Image (cartoon, rainbow, N blue to C red; front, top):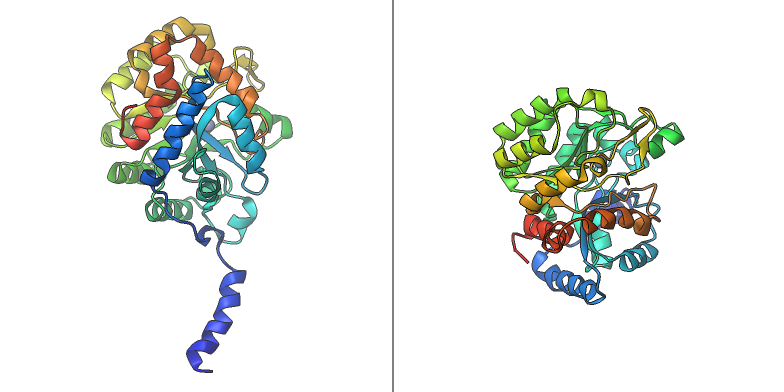
Length: 344
Ligand SMILES: [Zn+2]
């Protein structure tokens, strides 16, 4: 046995035992291969008489998902495709691993259901070791040809369910115009890869975001949860007219439709935070005027993976208020064009 073989014998179990989660062998995403399956699924849902949806923003806990039943719930809800982003399990971050390719693995198992999406910028990788997370993000996005990055929690209040559970680690406040923000915007601009931000709509946060949009005009930004305002007193500037002005000024700015139903209350403020519903007529005028800038989204997450059908009902309530042509664009055509540069 020569020295190299001995080294290999030692190295193999070592590598296998410590095989970094992120280094599991997966094929890079190939849109050309996936395309037919995606299009077939969109037409299959249409044939059922349902408007197919591409959900631009959902995430999951890779250690807990049952992909089989999850995809069946997508089928029942008419969710043709989902941009599914893996959350980074905390134990892996403790082990020094900052990336999970689970999203690509899910796409390999269900190539016609999912569009691979980068890991969400959320707790614990993003909050504890943001530079390492961004380094992994940049490397794996390119190596594996993901078509889109995940949702970065820049300014994020805990969700209503997290408040119920007393999980306050998601009260995230990262300066969008600080070094981390510049790094994300610059990478997006350089690569053309869209990214999502969770960024509460508050007066004092608008100017820093605007400065970034001015500085990085080619970065394609999806500002998630349009018109979701958790403290009205902190948000006096944002309105349909305000967003219209920004969409006009920033052609690479998009928003998504993930928010609660008309009665949903954000407990800490006691306010109805999904403000789309109270100004529906004005918002719809804007959506009709700029339909390709509004992307359908469910925001399924690790604590609500069994609720796809319930969440879809709220989304369909919104879609139902739109004229037929606009509805189709928001439901799936806008996402397709953004991600794959083709108009359906
Ligand atoms: Zn969000």
